Image (cartoon, rainbow, N blue to C red; front, side, top):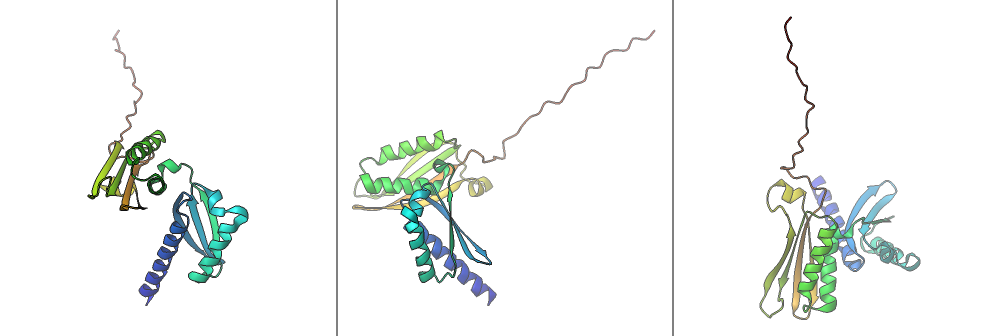
Length: 210
């Protein structure tokens, strides 16, 4: 019985996060964190453009709050906006940015978009970045294009915990284009990072006998 309630609760949180992500697609949305408090549910939205999330005179926040109350039956949802310090190091923001660019300009500039994004991420201090675009690019036959820069771990514990991975999709006339972004941030500690400290040396002189 407890397992069913827990599973139902997690499914509800997952649906809320997906709904917020789809609603704030063009607002630089990174991720959403839901915290339960005695006063109600606290929803923290991490985004690179908080002004668009809030809207004019808080219209978007009011609309989102009313929707959460009605659709997901939340009693007292408290929405808090947190700005992402460096959007170029957030994999989800980068993936959504590429998808938005492809939907706006089409596939004619997909190579320029990929290389420019690599430069922006690496100039922000990332150790490595990988972008994969999959779909009918640019011909009618589906294929994958890979853009890579820097050093990126592909296996081991660092690849799971130290590499940020995100997915997005762009809806084009030719079909859906999938986008996968992997970023290794500059604060990632690799197992082979070793610091050698020099110990102070003591000079021992020769003692002469009288």
